[in-house]
Image (cartoon, rainbow, N blue to C red; front, side, top):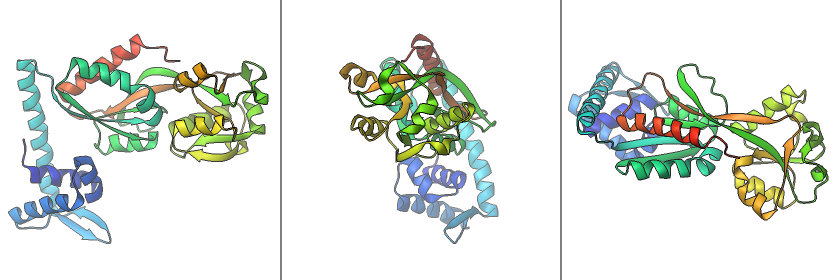
Length: 302
């Protein structure tokens, strides 16, 4: 509803990047540049200083940014006030989720939410935990769901459910003689893990430290950015791994992997993360409440 030039400028100023703004607005970078130049023509002054592939706000740009922030806050308040009167829950919500959550938890939750609120359009961005937290910090997404602790105290973090991690091996593997496995025994075999920045990798490393094991002792032969790729590599006999038990329903049914509990259980929270003080749409409040109830009703995901 607000001036498109101003909204595009606001995204660039907030992210200090034309590329990131284009991605968050689902526009091409030339289109973003064009809108900003139009606004600069309107004010007859530069709003950004551009030097060495970096941008910063000019004094005029800083003033426009401050007013734009107030304007968009008022627009959100106005839309919420009207929708409270009409009872309408609609709008666009941009969510972000780490890979495990996006592939194995959110589809059912969002499907049920969409059935109840068909006028809410949801866009989902998938990244590792570090990437999702960064998107929340930069206001690229409204809500993140992550699988590792969030250290930024300026963000609101709310645990939604607990996930259990287990060891997986190919069928008939030497580690699969019992139902549980000591974590130190895993050090003797090739290990396949997630990439740096992954919540799963961070949680595993912390677990190893608490067990008195330096993570560098793992015989890491592959780092993969996909859970399906990890499971496929283990099935092929390339190595062993530790993954969420909630992701193994198909493999357990088919018997294509051995699933072993760690002798000291490894659990982690899945958590909602969002800005503490950001004005929220009615749709966002409804989604948060819906997700809280969904997680209470589906507490055991393994």
